Structure formats: structure tokens, C-alpha cells
Image (tube, rainbow, N blue to C red; front, side, top):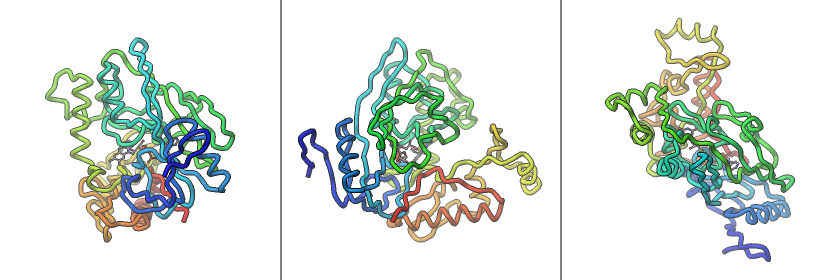
Amino acid sequence: MPHKTGRCNLNLTYNAELKPYNSFGVSAKATCLAEIHASEDLEQAVELADSNDLPLLLLGGGTNVLFAGDFPGMVLLMRNRGVEIDRESGLIRIAAGENWHDLVQTCLKNSLYGLENMALIPGSTGAAPVQNIGAYGIELESFFVELDLFDCNSGNVRTMNRKDCNFSYRDSILKQPRPRPQVVCSLTLQLLRDPTPNLSYPTLAKELEPIGDPTPQDIFKAVCQIRRRRLPDPTKIGNAGSFFKNPVIPHNEFEQLRTRFDSPPSFPAKEGIKIPAGWLLEQCGFKGYTKGEAGVSERHALVLINRGGATGKELHQLAMEMQARVQSEFGITLEPEVRVICTA
Ligand SMILES: Cc1cc2nc3c(=O)[nH]c(=O)nc-3n(C[C@H](O)[C@H](O)[C@H](O)COP(=O)(O)OP(=O)(O)OC[C@H]3O[C@@H](n4cnc5c(N)ncnc54)[C@H](O)[C@@H]3O)c2cc1C
């Protein structure tokens, strides 16, 4: 039942089941869930949470979270919509609740380019800057101009530019834990008006080899094809994509690794050498691993899956087991990319 007040109709559900709102498809309860369609909803929901001493949790598509237990607080489900496009300048302003993949398609339809390498990343646009989403040689950061942020502590809205966000690999200042969350309400991106294919990622370049001079639409299609082949579809089998970040190790540790393995896969990184976490996990035998209803994808050792009836706690335990094994086998610490919610 909508909770009515003088100012607006806030759509609230008490004792809310979160299974439909997380791509792992695990069951968890929240004290209450509020749908945010407009800034008034946000203000009112935060006020209500404050007056009931409820912690807050933001959720977009729920494709990068794992509920390892219930959430004894208020979930703010970002559902505000709207896209403003200026084709002349290539600037585009998007409401946080817009779906990311739909946005990529909208940009292509409007002859604005650059995002096609990030096609089919599930989730909302508002969450995209939180972990500086990226795929196939591109990160959000390259197109980012600014975002509008609602501070649940002060109730103020402020604008943050690229420097303020402090983006890095699957990270930004927005990912840092805070007692009260900061809500991305909208973001502005600068897109390219001329097609500028980025084929720096070898798998993508190989996929497009038969096409001499690929267009952004060709890249879009190729990225979708590769992703559908490599990753389980979260609408069919519960998962949150890559569970861990790829670790970066110092050069001397990489040399040690090379004494054990002929040619371990690696990429140069700012602070050392980046090793694919999926490869480390595969060496530990986790590809296709099963533990009850929790498991690891047969296609990719970095993707934890819910085979149907796994609990969030079981998936979390499996993730910790994987982390511990990589630590003992390689002395490398895997950091989760997925946010684990384990408050109760
Ligand atoms: C099959 C699959 C493939 C994936 N592939 C990729 C990939 O290639 N590259 C990549 O980078 N990621 C990938 N992901 C991870 C995920 O899609 C992205 O991180 C996405 O941006 C998450 O969006 P979401 O709306 O679902 O976020 P949620 O899971 O709802 O939230 C993620 C985090 O962001 C916070 N948050 C959500 N909305 C807001 C907001 N409006 N303001 C502030 N904070 C907010 C949440 O509190 C939480 O901490 C993949 C996931 C899946 C399931």
C-alpha cells in the first residue's frame, strides 16, 4: 500500500522480500523498501528512515550485491527516469534509475558513440560511477562529466566532477562505506559524435577480425555476442558477474609466479602487474565447482552462481573459501567486487 503524506505518495513495502531485487536471486528481508521515482520520494523516505532509526541501503538493479543475511533497515530502490540528449554537443544527462544497457542503445540510435564496448552490463545508470564500470577496454570514467549527489546526512544536493569522484579500476570515492549513503540522482556524460572504434581488448579485436572496418553497431553486436557466450544470463541463473576484482601484484611477486607457471596471463597496471582473478581461481580448481546449491560457473571461475536454492550465506561462505584458497596457494589477496550485505 502506498504510504500517503501531504507531500507525495511514497510507495513503501514493509517486511519486503528482496529476492526479485538482486541478480543472485537469494531470499532476504528488509524492514521496508521505498521506491524512489523523484527527489521528493528520496527526501521523504530518508526522513521516515531517520525518524524510525533505520539504516539505509541503495539499490539499483541489484546486480552487484550479495545479501548474506536480512537487511534490518530501509532499502531505497532507485527508479527515477529520464534522459536528456544534446546531439550537437554530445552531452547526455541521465537519471539514476535508467537501465544502463538501454542507455547504450539510446546513444547509438542518436549517433552518439563510445559506450558500445560496455553494452549488456546489467544494472542501473546511477550505480555505474560507484564502481566505475568497465568492459572490453573502456571504463565509464572516460566519458564522465559530473553527477548530482544527494547526501542523506545533510539533505543537500551537490555536483561532483571527475576529479571529485577519484575513479580507479572498479572503484571510486562513492564505493567507500559511509554511515549514511550518498545517492547518485543523475549523471552527465560526454559522448563522441564521430565513431571512434576501440579495439584495444584482444578478445573483441579477434571477434571483429572478419569485419574490416567495424562500426560502433558492429562493436555493440560483437560485445553482446561475447558476453552471452562467456557469462551466465542472470535472468536464468543467479549471479553477479565477476565476484572478485583482478588483483595487482608487485613485479617481484610476478617473477616468482613465473617460476611456477610457464606464462601466467598478466596485464601491465599502474602499481604493478594485474593478474586475472579467474585464472588464479581456475588453477585452484574452482571452475564448475559445486557446493550444494551454491557454485561457480562452468564458463568462468570468477562467476559465483546460485544453482536455484542457495542462500546468500552459502554463497558468501563459498566466496570466502575461494578467497582463502587463493591466499594459501598464491599468497594473493582477492578483493570482492560485489558488495556483500551481511548486517544480520
Ligand atoms: C552478468 C553480469 C555481468 C556483469 N558485467 C560487468 C562488467 O562487465 N563490468 C562491470 O563493471 N560490472 C559488471 N557487472 C556488475 C554490475 O552490473 C555493475 O556493477 C552495475 O553497475 C551494478 O548496477 P546495479 O544498478 O545493479 O547496482 P546495485 O547492485 O543495485 O548496487 C551496487 C552498489 O551501488 C550502490 N548504488 C546503487 N545505486 C546507487 C545510486 N543511485 N547512488 C549511489 N549508490 C548506488 C549500491 O548501494 C551498491 O553498493 C556485471 C554483473 C552481472 C550480473
